[in-house]
Length: 545
Ligand SMILES: C[S@@+](CC[C@H](N)C(=O)[O-])C[C@H]1O[C@@H](n2cnc3c(N)ncnc32)[C@H](O)[C@@H]1O
Image 1 (tube, rainbow, N blue to C red):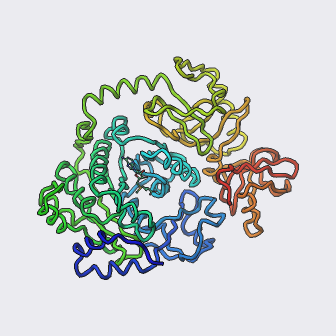
Image 2: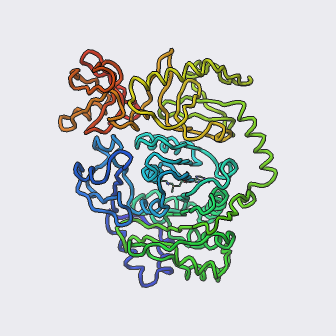
Image 3: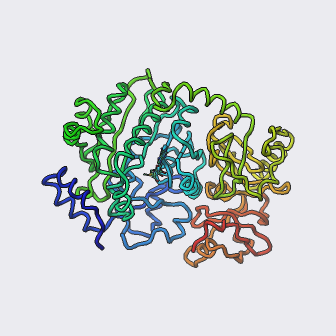
């Protein structure tokens, strides 16, 4: 199928690429590549290779990434719904590999929706440490939160904030920061035709302002000795090498880490910057910084099996960080800080809450937007703030609600779960952060949503199920995917299930009640078993259609 590519773009690439242009141009005649990345929070790569329904070929730069045939539909398999793999364009797997995350670190994914790279970071953390995952677009953070839940992520906080606001709460805090920057998307024309149409409308200069601000906010939030990976899916040097050269000029405490060329990363193109400098315009960087950008990396669609990407690994050189410097964050000036302090204090008094079933949001503290409080949940807010009134938290009510969760956990979960139990209304989260640290930030998920107390009873949330392993649950039902039972469950059907099929642990072999429903030992969701029937608790919005 012919792909629409803007002529102005092709002319520019011809000027930039010279003799490489013909190979570059003909790459658009080939089909795009489809990749999946194994979710090692749920299964090891070797175990997945044993059960994989697809023929797989490794992606060179990602040990958990594989190419699948383009005519297959990996989204139409129970394993996809069990969160065993994420469907991801192969080049898009590179930035997180270069971030070099290890368990226990504090990581920020600044432009994260819909969450491909956040799920990859979460898998690297293996449940130890913290992932703060953010996107400025409220609609897109819903998809982000859903993906964190589908992939069984426990130790993440999902924000919907402007980076400079996060920077005020987390100065010099994160070990690793990913900026998968909004960009003009030239590298995605083969994958997404809409990108080509948008390119014709939006200018590169709009993106460069955002990208510059994102880099500066990240520098403020980076802990001493930390690492920032900056990536785009565009070819334009203004959004790539120029952005990095300018950053290096302004942050002498950072250096570039060269990329492993044997894996397919081509060098950055400083010579394009000399040309930009000669043309004048917005280009502001020294020729010394420009020459260093040869250490950035480019993935070219005519040289590797994947779409076009740009990557830069920025390492903070010394322990003496200049990161705790609010002025570096551009728009974060003295006036802002005073305003912020006020906001934080007010927020500390008045935690506000909006429904927290899967697909809804919880906003902590005062936000720049009014909190959405669904009618359904307004009545739940016993002991919490109501509009226009001071918030008086009734501790006994909180304690009773938390006891409901603890009682449920003692009956249905066989292990101690990580995180601090936090209440928002009658919704319970296990959070990797204290509530106060999120005050004033638009928080979509303060942690792992485990359920809600309704009329004195605890109803487990879907994300509790998706992040539990079969051995962590007291009652488990394994569905047969060959007989189509798993698909029927995913479609929301009630199933006939004999008591003997339910594995019971720690509760004297009594199958009645909540059961963790699995396929091949991997959790899909909850069911409620009674007298040979499994009532389906798979959320309506998640169902297989
Ligand atoms: C390339 S996409 C991110 C893709 C994502 N990292 C993934 O792997 O699924 C860029 C994202 O940046 C978000 N964005 C744009 N401007 C932003 C800003 N100033 N702060 C945070 N996010 C921003 C967009 O809403 C968009 O979701």
